[in-house]
Amino acid sequence: MGSKILPKWASKPCVMGIDEAGRGPVLGPMVYGCLYCSQSYLKTLSTLSFADSKTLKEEKREELFETLKLNDSIGWDVDVIDPRELSAKMLKKNKINLNEISHSSAMGLIDRVLKMGVLLTEVYIDTVGDAGKYEMKLSNSFPSIKFVVAKKADSLYPVVSGASIVAKVTRDRALREWVLDETAENMQRNFGSGYPGDPQTKSWLEDHKHHIFGFPSLVRFSWGTCNSYFKDAAEVLWESDNLDEDGGGSNNKNGKRQLKLSNVGFTTSKRSEEIESSGKGRCRFFQARKLEHLTYF
Amino acid sequence: MSWCDSVQEPRILVAPDPGTDGNGLGQMISLRHPKSGNATQYLFVNGMLQELQWFKNLYGSWFLGDYITEDGRMYLSTPIDPVFIMLPIFEEARMKKGDDLGRFRQLDEILFIDGYPGYMQLMSVVENCMLVVSEVKEIGSSKFFRLDDSKVLRWLCYKVCQLKQTLPKLDKNYAVQSEKDTLIDAVSILGEYLKEKPWLQLLCDHLKLNILEVTGKAQVNAEESNPGLRNELQEQSNDKKATTAKKGRQAKKVKLETESHNIKDMFSRASRKKN
Image (cartoon, rainbow over all chains, first blue to last red; front, side, top):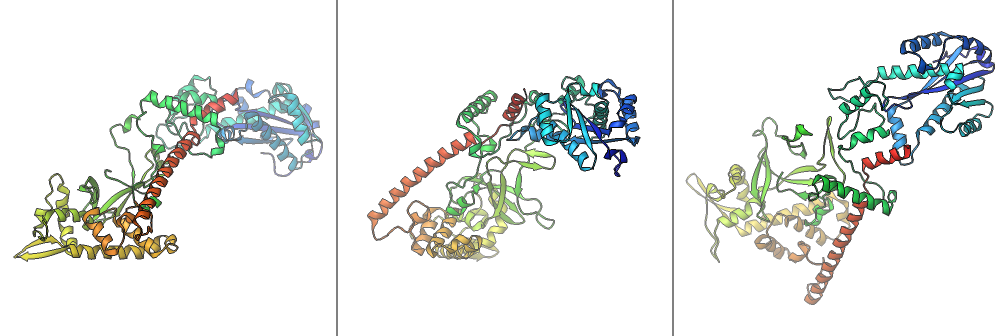
């Protein structure tokens, strides 16, 4: 985090770079990082050995991050987005996709820095989705700032390279220090890079899946990767408003469920979630309270 | 899950605490249901007999510590007066024929029911509670019991009075309805535990109620002076009941089809959207 007292250089025209880390992995937070400095400092910044964080080893990144923090001519900030937040937004009824989440995070950082009193005049950012649309969106929100939205911005602009390091190191540390909420005894932390294609990550997911609760909350349930692990999982049914369903869909769902039931040979027994007490056959007192008599416990 | 194949899944039962001064843990005993005569489990704990009931909403399950139990039912154990349980047993035991009042019997003789050893466990409880409805002869140290119709009727009337007083305290809606309707409700609750013949009929005759009103087989407040009208009302009531049942069934089916989400579908949807 930058110093609390606004430095003098911040009242002069400043430049910001924004980059993210952890967009693709199936687990851990997605982190948006930003780095900003005065325009006059840009040449000095480019002489520092910042590079695209993806080309650096973890030790080097950590070292650069510490150097960056001590540099009075540089400001920085992060937005750490919890995997549960990602899943909740991507799975809710009115879905928010990953691009929208990314855009909001980036704009949030800009807003935060502006509110600190920094005179931002230029922002460089890697594109998410269509570059032109993204730039227009940003310019509409922040008319006084000139935006450069480009692919591989982290390789082209030192401020974005720096932001890349900020984001990457923050994510790496978050994962390293992650406290698993789940209390099961066999929780391991050797989940690898977190990318869906990583064999270590795949192995970890296989070992840590639960047939009712899915995965530890570290995992992004909204990822398509998770679906293949859930074919044997318990079905979870719940009530919803009538308005949520359309007639056609319900037929398909019903048909699908019936097929599934016949596959597992449970066609004759009533599903436990569909059981409901009614007190039918009893006097009014017990019916009003839906109390069923039990002959065998 | 393999670990729970051999272990029965835990369930939620609300029951009295056996405590340290009780006679140990409660035990399930099998007795005949006083109305149906079918084998029914009762909980016997702290010298008290409890009947079992359950309640469940759609789509319920329980979190138990770090585990989940699929059976979302809440099981309830509530006290039941052992006299209800014993009425049919004592009725049978006295071997009444015609105007003959029947025989006096000893408890260990009365409670010996083939296939139901649980009755013997209630010996001490029964000895006390059946005094209320029985004649007792003591010969030496032995007691002989014979069920007494007039005592049973008095006991039943006492039960009705208790219910008439208690029901308005449970539910404010009773204040709105007539005293007769509350009376019918009270008697219908007792009807859950009494055979229609002889006890429910005896009680209804005494209270000048139509037994069909109590058992819900006729329209409430049917005109007794017009038997034809009563029959007609009964038929209408039956029709209405059939219609209601049909509608209920349809509604439930529709609800099941449209109102449940499948978490796999959610993942599929998300996956599709992502691509």
